[in-house]
Image 1 (cartoon, helix red, strand yellow):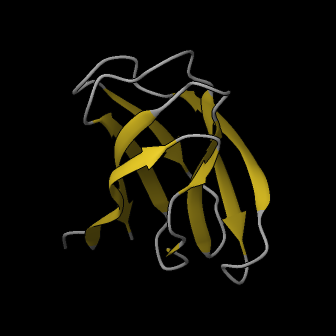
Image 2 (cartoon, rainbow, N blue to C red):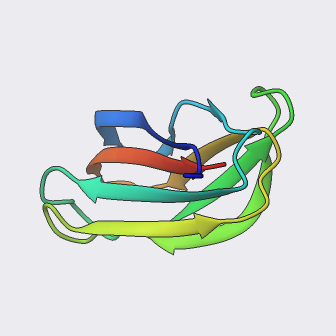
Length: 111
């Protein structure tokens, strides 16, 4: 029996600057996830690490604890694996003044 898999695009062609986050995604049915972030244009400035946040209701967020580098060049990809994440997942980043990245963020979920 093949496991159930799903790919969800949670941010497409979004310009991240300042406080940024993807749309929340309800993933409570999945047992594991991988988040991929791709830079669609050359990023500007010094980039911080992205963070994973989780939520029981999709409105009130807690840091999950995972952090990973944002891609540093156009078409580069970074990722983070997740094993325990409750019901809702999102990716956030706090970019310093002058920093900017255009992202494609996808969640890859497996039951």
